[in-house]
Image (cartoon, rainbow, N blue to C red; front, top):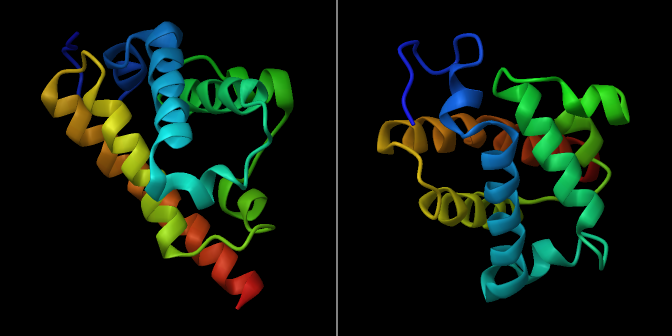
Amino acid sequence: MSTNRPFGTGDASYQAAGGIDGLRRLVDDFYQLMDELPEAANLRRLHPESLESSRDKLACFLSGWLGGPKLFSDKYGSIAIPSFHARWPIDEALGNAWLGCMERAIALQPFAPEFADYLLAQLRIPAQRVVQASRARHG
């Protein structure tokens, strides 16, 4: 899927991801990898046994974050990603595990290579901020 507008403009990123259906496939693969990969075991332990709610929240968040419908705020209210996650001690290893699962999940999608690279680069920013916010709170 391609777009005439640069990623990050309007809903170009949302469309490049395949809309909400594409994002749900990405999120499903992401959490499947988190369940399976030994290097993500500590990250997985921070999540509830059932990932149903986590899957919906992440897909809804990504929808709005990528310029699509603001499904997260419509369904769950507002969220500040770093401060929300700061309640858990998330160090660089956990941040890297999250990014590793996401990188592998992105690779499984039928995304254009330039969008896959763009998306992973953009996801590094909030992932790093979560680690920084947690470090500030937990030392």
